[in-house]
Amino acid sequence: MVQSMNTKVDFVTAANSYIGLTDYGKIMIGDKGFEFYNDRDARKYIQIPWDDIDCVIASVMFKGKWIPRYALRTKKNGTYTFASKHPKKVLREIRKYVKPERMVRSLTFFQVVKRGLKAKFGRKSSN
View 1 (spheres, helix red, strand yellow):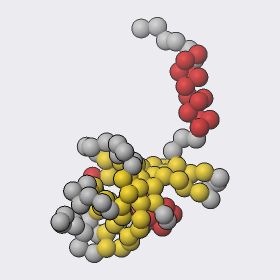
View 2 (view 1 turned 90 degrees about the horizontal axis):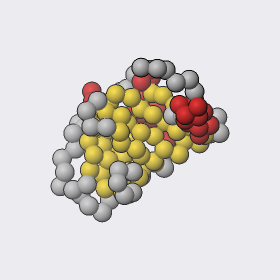
View 3 (view 1 turned 90 degrees about the vertical axis):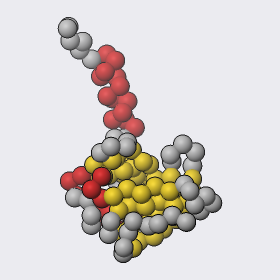
View 4 (view 1 turned 180 degrees about the vertical axis):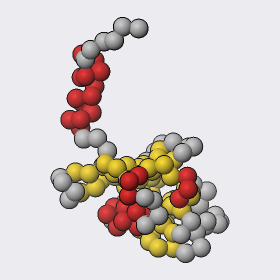
């Protein structure tokens, strides 16, 4: 069995992890960090200490009515994407430990397309 890094648990909810194939499990938010535990395989877990989180990226739809997924970008190990049953509660609990300036919205579909078109057809600088 995996040992939790948290000494006090603030919130637990059902969630999905999108690292490779989709894993179903539980998210646990506590005083030491963010943890994800797989329901079926106890060896598949993710533990991210609060000090290691660089920023939290939330995909916000319909003016904040729906948050389908969110990602935690770490300083060393890349980005971990999750979806949960209660995403607003999860983000509120994360906000207790991560500064609100480091919690951002992801780009919308049209912003991504606009950036791509600017990169493709925008000014070309000569080197």
